[in-house]
Image (cartoon, rainbow, N blue to C red; front, side, top):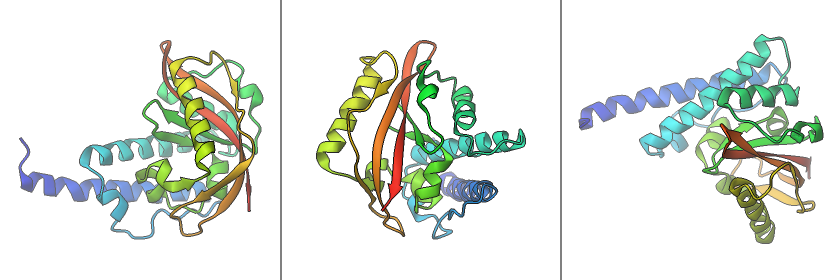
Length: 221
């Protein structure tokens, strides 16, 4: 059993690793012409409020993302190349979408990947072009604490996600939810958007559904 003293020694280590990863990702995004704040407070209050298992998950998710970005850039490609960027992420996690999903991906779309536990593990560059959240906020706060939309729309999107995760939708799904407003709930900019969910696909590993990804059009209001 870990002693209280041992636990206290581990906490600063986690905080320091998370801070460095946020700073590293901010530099990676800067190479693409984007200015994204790694955090507001270097003490990382959002991260520090997480339980240790949640801290470890946030660290691993952020580390994966940073390494995927760096691999793409090391191959002399831009992260703005969404198909290449997304495929690099999917290969890292051994995830396979519907065969026709990328035929429907447009360069201006936001692309997001979620696990079956509703953890967002991937966002393409378009996401960071419009978001005003810090990296700490994005990797420590649940998505339903980050964004608001009309309750009826949220229910429809949640039902669509359940259909994907249950295998009810065999291929690429076209969302029936139309354009609607989405807004940041606790960011510095409190930005509002008009968004339209477009296409989604379940993600499989060895034939088993492990998550889903989807595309969205977005316009800042």
